[in-house]
Length: 189
View (tube, rainbow, N blue to C red):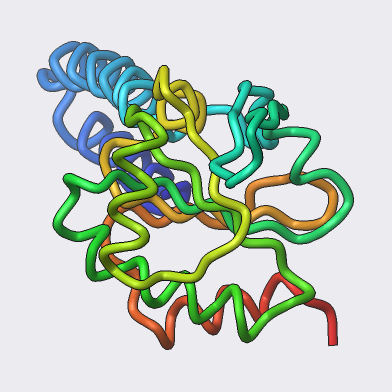
């Protein structure tokens, strides 16, 4: 992104030197373009929080009393993949088996399944219907995680290193080879 901005700046400078009559329009359009670029970065979530957000979650477990936790605590100290999903999300249906397989293959990377905006009964029914024997399923009934990480849709896969810093964000379907590659990047050799 920065090389493109530098190239554009050089080209605009060259044009301003070659055609003095264009200096004012070029300066004005460059200023407007810069404002739109910065504002667009904020609007698209490119400048969102890079650390694991501290949002409250409820465990989807068979225990009589649901367990409460905060996402930042769950992800502390080890590489973590956060999978944002919902039962109504068609692409999530395709993604869930890949996330589940990753959870089985990579025990040194924690995979957290965070349901967005649904109640326990709906999430549990979906997982049972699909035959997904996944662990670490959490409910975010208020759907706070998505906006906190700049997610523009579901599914969203977030990759955090052991220090809790965002390494990669994938909105939409992530292929099994790409998922495997990102998981390898999280674990030191």
